[in-house]
Length: 329
Ligand code: SAM
Ligand code: SF4
Image (cartoon, rainbow, N blue to C red; front, side, top):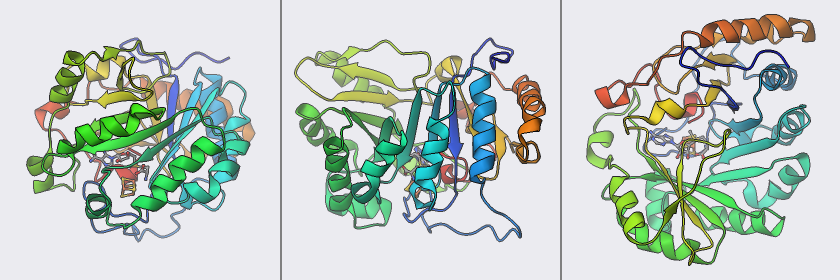
């Protein structure tokens, strides 16, 4: 193995979030409220299967053991199953995850599992079909739910469900969500709404901290679970009476960045050291041949030394990220 990816603050990077497309067919109010708009850039195309293979090999060579395939909506790629296969075949990669809006899950999740997808996250912002429609711009609540059922049928032991917490919209639904996971092995993950470059009033109207949920959980017998080295940033709580778990993702909390273990590759092949705050570093020219692996690793290692200690979101920094669909949430 080449030298483990590590930054100046001795953070080690075990987890790669790989965006494979910016395109999405949903219009989530907090992400792409007007739907996906092509950038208009000529010759812009998303990273190809051979490029994905090379970049994942480079990361695996430097200690990465988990890859999340994301987007945009990653399942819109025609070669999505092949992407899973290529990532899963990479020596050193133990966990292959995806985050999806669930649109294609019912039909395809069996195929994904066979190709090597070990973990699945699906976004469900409300258990009320009308609210789901209002938030996502798509009247597909029942289709997404059927996809979750199908994931269990094809053999997943647990499904993770992402909920972006929003005041006045879904924040009041905690009792329904808790009831839903009582008998189901679902890890429900409440994500605090993050402010991105293109967000105007939405953040001020709907942002709410996860602290009240955390206080409620602790007061009601939920216990914080220990975190593994390639786990994501969620604080996960368990309870003896529930088959499901609750995760809280609270990027506005002070010490959030101290445990950062992940790096990002955008669908255009740029390295992003953080979800927020920088333009990204071009890597694509070094994804063109297997012989370039050493140079690719060197470029990543050297830029990693510029990774900032924090995203400074709590100081109002929204950086250069227009919306999370552009670098994969
Ligand atoms: N399309 C897929 C989906 O929605 O699951 C994957 C990409 S999406 C950008 C990844 C995750 O980021 C989703 O769970 C989504 O809800 C979340 N997300 C997007 N914009 C967000 C924001 N402004 N604040 C918090 N979470 C956000
Ligand atoms: Fe699409 Fe996911 Fe963004 Fe919703 S959050 S618009 S599903 S990329």
